Length: 252
Image 1 (cartoon, rainbow, N blue to C red):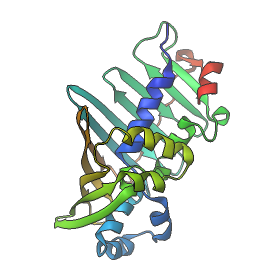
Image 2: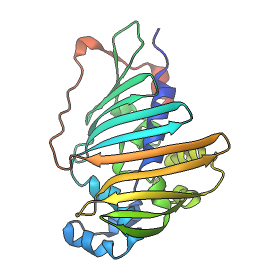
Image 3: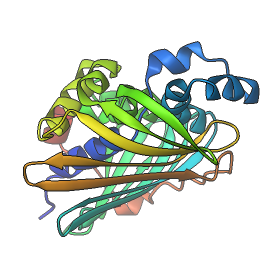
Image 4: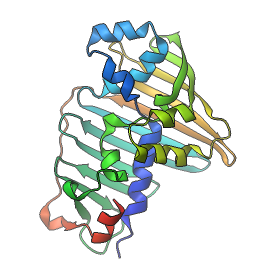
């Protein structure tokens, strides 16, 4: 029997949301292009907060690694922001794959007695639901939305701290704020130190930070590359796909 995809997708989206993000108010006000990157470099906080948005001005690839004790979650994703298409492969440690097109979301788990892929119609997703919200990567306001201090360390590297409460406030929707509140409630200290690296065009290429919780440290790493390179989105064959259940649409 196929396991419920709801908790699996929730983990995927929460991991992406807390691992990366951009303050939408900052990026919306910043003109695009190298000149803007040079200008924002004079303000380290603005440079870091805008870096993720600059990384997604064109297609990009993202790798996420989250370590907590002896558990490791890894994600590899390719994103085409203009069309909203993306692929995602995640190990939690069980493998989960996702293919997103303009019209549908396909999800595959490792265990299923039926067809390997489940198809969700994007038009049937709740606009304020976790899946529809999470698929708009550019709208996310993760930990970077709460950056309060940043200092250039040379070679495009920055060190600083983000405030968890400010990151929640910077989220672009109540659904995202709720996800961040849930993720950040385990923090012992609302101030989260980070290290970020930007390329010469102001694009975020690496972000690392550690959550200090009562249960131990949670180490987070995001790397981005392949800016502007073509992203190939191959949808699963119809013979390998089954429609999502009504229960999944009620959740999402």
